[in-house]
Amino acid sequence: MMKIKMKRKEIIIFIIMTLLAIVMIYPFYFMINSSFKSNAQFLGASGHSMLSWHKLFKALPVGRQLLNSTIVCTASILIILIVSTLAGFSLAKMRSKASPIFFLGIVGAMLIPLQSIIINAYVNEANHFNLLSGYWGAILLYSALGTPFATFLMTSYFRGLPDDLVEAAICDGLSYQRVFTRIALPLAVPAVVTIIVLQFIQIWDDLLVGLLFIQDPNYRTITVGLGALSAGRTTDIPVLMAGSLVSAIPAVVVYLIFQRQLVNGLTAGIGK
Amino acid sequence: MLPALALVAAFLGIPILQAVYYSFTQWDGLTATWVGISTYTHELQYPIFWRVLENNGLLLLGIPVAMLLPLGIAFLLNEKVPGWKFFRSIYFLPTAISWVVIGMVSLRFFAQQGLLNGILQGFGLGFIHTDLLSSERGALLAVSITFIWSMVGTNTIIFLTGMATLDNSLNEAARMDGASNFRIFRSITLPQLQRFIQFSFIITVISAFTALFSLIFVMTEGGPGFGTTTLEFFIYQSAFSHSDYGTGAMLGVILFFMMAVLGIGQLAIMRNKD
Image (cartoon, rainbow over all chains, first blue to last red; front, side, top):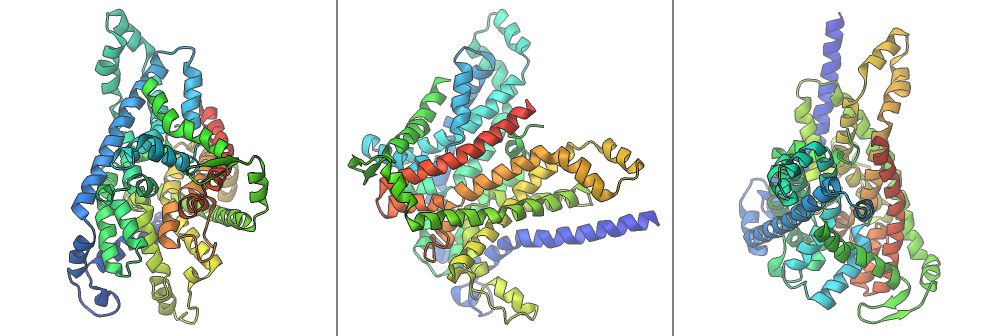
């Protein structure tokens, strides 16, 4: 009797979860389905076609923009990793009097919303540094935005490594640089992967920074290209859906492979 | 340590200080004239400013839903019914999708000929023909629903992580003492989840106030009227559509203070754990 009751409960839960899954997955079905229709088919005519995909490749330099996204993401993530692992290591293992203040400053920077600094960052880069013509304006801002949380994560990670390990290596005559590159960094791979995944999705999916800080359309990322296409009031929905799909796929693939690291990054703020 | 400091100072630290300075000026991006505190007092008398804050306030009304729904889902997932890991992956999937894409699909969902009306018709409710996006409040509702949909995954994961830390022996002890399921939930489970609920609350508010720019940009462009112009979107409009950089900087400072209060709350939670 007990067993049957459990079963029934399980079945009800399973049904509810399936319905929910349909709600969550529907947009993907909608994107895929409508991208394989012409505008007329989308509006009611039957059948499927590749027309919208052809149109998309005419309306958007898809390949170029995917490449731009990749360049911007890779460069920003590299900068974030270099500065945050260095800062995290020195904060955790080479403590000085300035460390607490510095740590507070970095964590405090996590509180600054992008919208609060974007105007001044934009004017600074445009008027004083002339950074908006290529990729660099966006790359540097993305890097600065990602660094505080990454440093916070790396610091907590390196704090988790035993001090004895570092001290023993120093006693053996290794320099701090050596300890960092030979011992600490290889041990920090999980945290590094978490940062890469988190930042990749964030930067890949961003519109605002890309929109303002990449002024030459040739350097636009795919998300910005898509945003511009929709703001241009393209009424051809299937084309927009095909574009959405192209822009979403890389981030979805990264998500599917590195789901666990993404969850780790998300919950890093609460601890275990 | 120094490279990180230089990068953060140059692109976050200095701009926020500049924003505070320029918030007291009239500034078109090139020349700024010092005005003083009256920039703030003037803005506070400006009806549209309050309209925008009202929109932010209305967005907050969606937050209980954006938290309770995932709490329920997390409980169901935590029953570990066969396939629960697969469902978890699906619910979390929107986290990987850009707001631009989400906004575009959502726009079609709420459109006159969109799925929402199709569903209503399918259930024989065709007489309730919705056209949310054409009214100010309706459009805000559509934005809120989209926002809630995309927060489901994140909050579910937070609560699931919390549930993994629960101490089951407490439940059993309470059950032995004859406590009801509801009683156990209220007096034992919820207190243990408190830290996670606070964290989810802060994450959800921060997202509602600072992460919806792209969604609004794609879905409504702040309209109709000022119907979906939230503070973060108003900042963008002031500076980049109306070239009123001074007002934009001031609004940014206001947003910063709002978020700083929340953020300090979050830091307090993280400290608790240490």
